[in-house]
Image 1 (cartoon, rainbow, N blue to C red):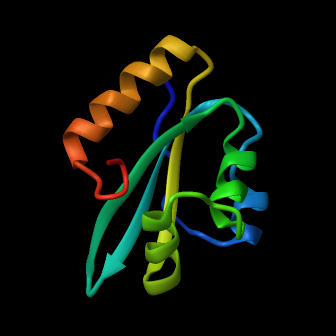
Image 2: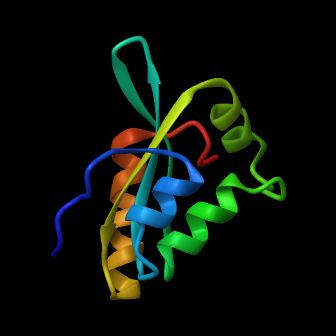
Length: 103
């Protein structure tokens, strides 16, 4: 399996620069003081497209919108081609971090 990417500031520019148009699992992270916290875990067959959707005005998840508006946010991802492996890792990550926007 691939390694998790670096943590990148969550901007459209960084999404275009660093996020692949390939499948994977991702974490959305915010910084509060000096600490980082995962607020959402997801997966997609096209990470670049999905990150862009979260940044758009049409994002349906109000919780994600609040974090993106109120905090310095970041993203990181791991490329995974297999849908089964993405499903499995996404569940593991949600159990591990209990992100507030995955309700």
